[in-house]
Image (cartoon, rainbow, N blue to C red; front, side, top):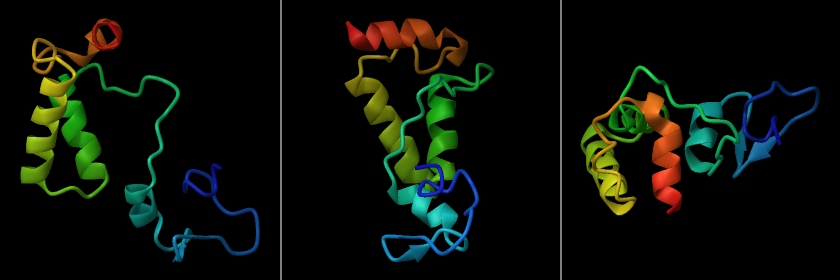
Length: 99
């Protein structure tokens, strides 16, 4: 899984995901995979909104689309009170989202 998701280098041979070579197109492959980390990977120095925008940029999502999607996600998850607060409050955000 780590090689498929372009986290670990290939140990040998060749690997393609959706027809793309993981050695040459890792960024593009990562942008189409729906990988969700098991651990909290938010930057506590950024707001929840800023964290969403960082991830969007990492996956090559255009800024205007990312801003709209971040706002929509924050509203959908009823996290408007957390969207501008520090992500260091992420445990509270996760608990709010679950309730």
